[in-house]
Length: 166
Image 1 (tube, rainbow, N blue to C red):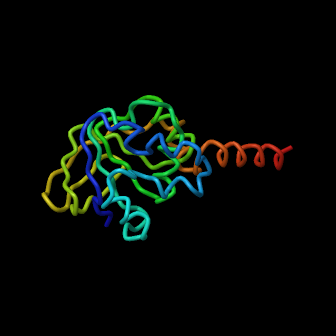
Image 2: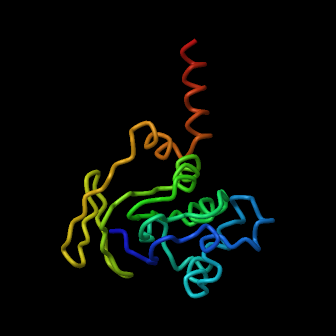
């Protein structure tokens, strides 16, 4: 069962997720080391692989606001984190879809670090406190891109299917 490994509040900027001083690093294989770099304890856990893939980061409203830097998404995806937030900033959401980041829009979600969450297609169930929260599902057209691993893998698969059918 996925566990909440980090919780943040409202209006968490891409500058917090991926500080601007690391903008020269753009390769998705290198960006994960700078995820939440100024949150030194959490960053150290990420860098030393103490956070298992599929762990959950819980955010408040407007997660990923600020600049349109794609690295804020790639650094989280590199650790295979699942982001559960009340809602996402528009550009971050689209970047997340394009890169295949698992994101769940769950208004009113209540969870603390260490809580175990069950993720269903309809709800986030906090197994620790017994509460359940309805999710706002992604439109199917966006979810298939996320499930494919992002826009490039999705497009590649579609093109290969078209070529094979011809």
